[in-house]
Length: 259
Image 1 (tube, rainbow, N blue to C red):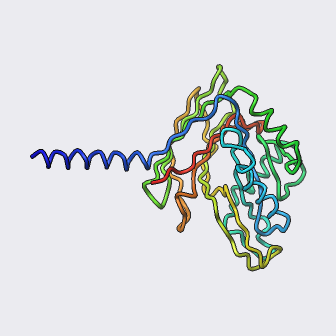
Image 2 (image 1 turned 90 degrees about the vertical axis):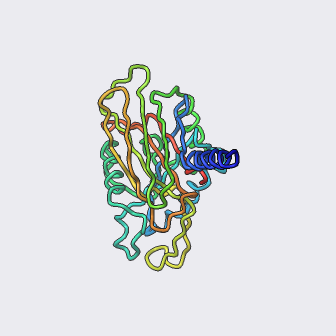
Image 3 (image 1 turned 120 degrees about the vertical axis):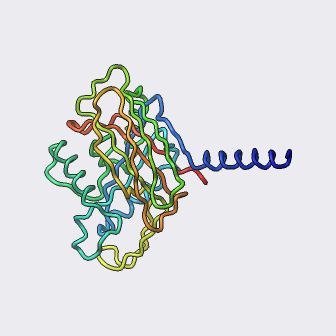
């Protein structure tokens, strides 16, 4: 009987440990984290250097509590001859929307937005200065993420966002995205024909805008993964943005925990 009881306790403990291993949680910093959006395309021959730059940010000391990088692949270069497998019309529409808010006449690739603003000096030391300035600001929003990775087909995400210091909800909205790292494409046509293109932080699924009705918003979303996705190379991002001005108030990244 004692042996049976030991086995039962061990089994329950193992099940609890396995469940905990698949439940990832994260909360945003007390200061403001910079959201860095790269609009890119495999059909654009000037984009690979920007893709490599985005991939390098973690190695340059830009930890997730300082910078949340995402790559949004647009589809308007597909006509050249190569269809970008990660491109979505929704990302092209978002880029145009952001351009309209900034009263810009055109969209282009590669384009970097920092905190919702066009940032053409991403190759220079001005990037570090911009990030440092953003990180110095107290957070106006607190974001929490919980990620269930038990399914290999999709992430089950629970996100909560709380407005701080009496910030009015106004035009604020929450956005969620599932991303994957270590993706590689062998390009067969177009401007990058014959090249092997590596990608990181590629957003594959998107949810938002999810509007605030009060000071706190809680959302549960199922974000599908690619058919051959590697959950260990994947994760989720969340950010709160003003839809009227384009300003990003806070961002959070949560890589998938090892199972």
